[in-house]
Image (cartoon, rainbow, N blue to C red; front, side, top):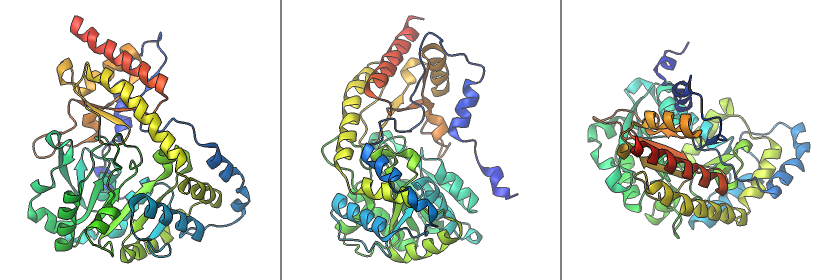
Amino acid sequence: MNPNLDKLHPYPFEKLRQLFAGVTPNPALAPISLGIGEPKHATPPFIQKALTHNLQGLANYPSTLGSDALRAAIAGWLERRYGIPPLDPATQVLPVNGSREALFAIAQAVIDPRSGALVVCPNPFYQIYEGAALLAGAEPYYVNSVPARNFACDYASVPDEVWARTQLLYVCSPGNPTGATVTLEDWRALFALADRHGFVLASDECYSEIYHGSEAPLGALEAAHRLERADYRNLIVFSSLSKRSNVPGLRSGFVAGDAALMKKYLLYRTYCGGAMSPPVQAASIAAWNDESHVVENRNKYREKFALVTPLIKSVLDVELPDAAFYLWADVTRTGLSDEEFAQRLYAEQNVTVLPGSYLAREAHGINPGRNRIRMALVAEIDEGLEAAQRIVQFCKSLKRH
């Protein structure tokens, strides 16, 4: 067996399962899960129709590169969304079966494990980054998020000797679980570091279309364009329809950016990347070409967060995030740890949240997820409100004891 498998940590949801083992939730209350970031809003009917009306495509082997029409639709969306010049669909865009496997695969394609390679990633983080680094034979280096910077990563704290060994940097903007976004000045600094040390920037932008202010989050390609990096050197971005269009089961996303990187990445994926099914490609084209359902979806999240956040804020330390669909709350004032809070909330109120320490690692003297919980506000508004009210009741009960 690959010895690097022994370096993997249990996935957060396995840790949660173990935490809840032997706990019987309150049977008088229906279960509500805020634990998993799985969109629960309805899939738009026109996407379902595009999928089912193209089932004849199941008779054909798809290519890894995907159809010209799909790559053109993705390139068109990127141009409209970020105000960038048109990408070349033939050389700068590649459809993938969800961003998860593509984010994992980029490390396997990029890393030279003979050279003491480092993979830099945010902390807390999407667990795929760490697993991808370890299984590629590299060592993860964690950059802690800073509450004073609205949970943006403190890249200035990274020593130059770390950057010198870095082969891949995972950036997540908007971030999971914090919702933090990367600024243009952050990108300017990261591009300069990538130029100096030659590492690849992998920007995970799966939450880009769920935001709470009037201004859409800055994308990496947009930042590169604004900073006059026309060739997008060292940069590739990852995005997905899962959150944007409420189709997590479709497993449809894309990778785009530096044509030289994409050429090598395509070569890698012709050997191990699953090609996207033709019916899924057809549904994806329909989704990328329509924006009205995205606006409607975003408005539902805004309404939900506007109702839920003040309730949670009355009992926990939490602020509205820049973007994404998580609340990243500090439970310190309850006197419970993040694990204790999650376990007791599940037992007493039948509400599931994820302990923040499960999403982070001890790095530079701290675990930045400790005593925080992640709440995924993915359910419909009524269920989200019910969960918030139960959390308030639970916290108030702690004060009475």
